[in-house]
Length: 378
Image 1: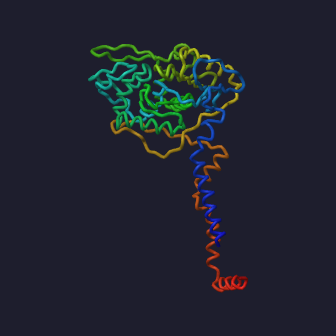
Image 2: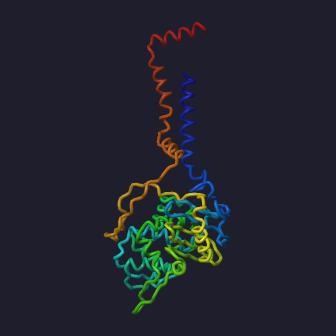
Image 3: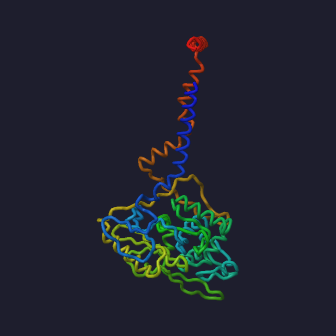
């Protein structure tokens, strides 16, 4: 009986312990998107050699298939600068009504960094503020939009971190929705590609990202023209825009996309001293030219499946509900692991406990006979 109880306890320890540890450590076994996508500063490609670029990290991927075609330090955690606004948009776009009117505040106007020109007391539509956010990278526009949402800046930051985790952007941690340099604020070239893919799946995001010009009101009267800072839109055939960024610590960062010959490619670059548009152009040209010869070196993961209802700000009652999320596709091995992790640890020990119960329920006569035989042997 002691042997049987020991076996039961050992089974529980062997099953429950490793299963819990393995489930928690799944992401640390290999980089998200594939074992070849490391954080090391190594260029990874198969089928053709990509051009040299000055960025410390980059990713080129097919948005439609999710295939990563080339990468350099894709999971290196770096400062994102204003490319983080792609994640800000993913959070705010579904929650705010584009027709809502926002009154500019002193806090909006007093924010540091790039501004589009939000003045205290002036009235702006949410739609116009999104244009100011995408085209001019206006931190004042971001501040006004986030403050207009329920919970303000702190709630927006919390939603951004949750959204990043939801879509598999595990390198990202947000502390400021504008993308300004802040302690602990990081992302990666891989995560920026995930934001771009999720964003371009939304018609409103794609429209803002590809808008070249808009008119923004001046303080007293009249308007002035705002041009999109993403130069790819103006000089690259098939460009879809998206977002640029720059801070002293982050240096130049970039998220761009283009569609040619039935393929939609995204390129992300981080920590580049200069020449960001030229580097993006070289990588896109190389990818389109060698597309049929290239073999994927990784994948852009799909968002996790979550059960949630419409996520709309109470301040924007007519807001747009969240789009339906696609179901994550698991590899055969992952499917087995997923099934195993759903089975409670105690279930594996159930057969042994059943045997123990049968042993204890033996007829009294057999138990007495067994004790008599043991006493005779002694």
